[in-house]
Image (tube, rainbow, N blue to C red; front, top):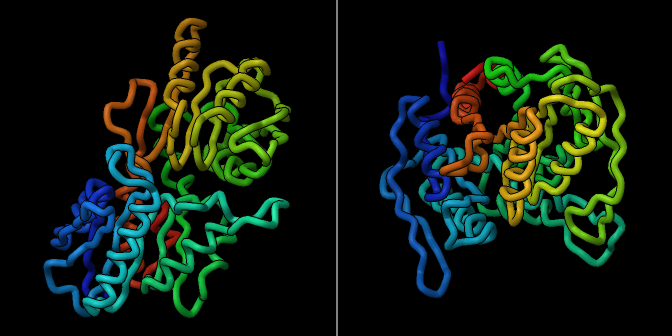
Length: 336
């Protein structure tokens, strides 16, 4: 007999409404009625329009939302805090923030500079102080961020994609002959995919200039990719400079077709132009280039070389498991 800890409800901040609706449908639930308001001065609020007392409430937000060009990552994060507090003050028994892309996750340490903040910790404390009991994130940049929450007040549920995304890539014929990591820091992630897909492994060793964001000084390929299709896996693609350099290094090593796969297709600034340039080069030279992202960040009207994996099914299974006190690890397996 299943004993849910309390009635399950899904609440969405506007940028995450599409994802939240798909998750709610997978759970056979309606979204909680709510109204998000932004005032002329830039302040915002969210009002819950139905009873959520005693519920197990999941609050969705998309801090990076290309479709919402009126607000910043910080605006959306603060709106998430408003929504969490609204749930707490409406007497929800449990409040979970569902933030697939955790903002500030790359700002998890000072990296040798002493006069700057640690934004990942600041955001963790804000979520905790707003009243969140749990935060669900996907492929967070550094798992140590979980230690930035007080364990008696709020916990981090970090979801891994490889068990679900790996089989999906195979159904699309994008698994490659070799799985590569764009840097040593992502080697463990690449190893997960390589083991699941039963393919070889390669890595690019990068030397970064931390004084300049997104700048790589030197890159060295470790592993054999000659004459092989490569699946390059990463957690975040921001401006795509590192990805372009990695693909060029792989092609220089003799790789054939290249598929780039990431959990968080942030695609800031010149990213689309850079990736499009690789796609055009591949077409001209007679090899195939693909980019696979996920609905952690949603892009409307994307070009044909971009494929999006929808995480709604994964989130639905995980939320159901938490609500029923089942295993979250088991819920992370499956093909959408």
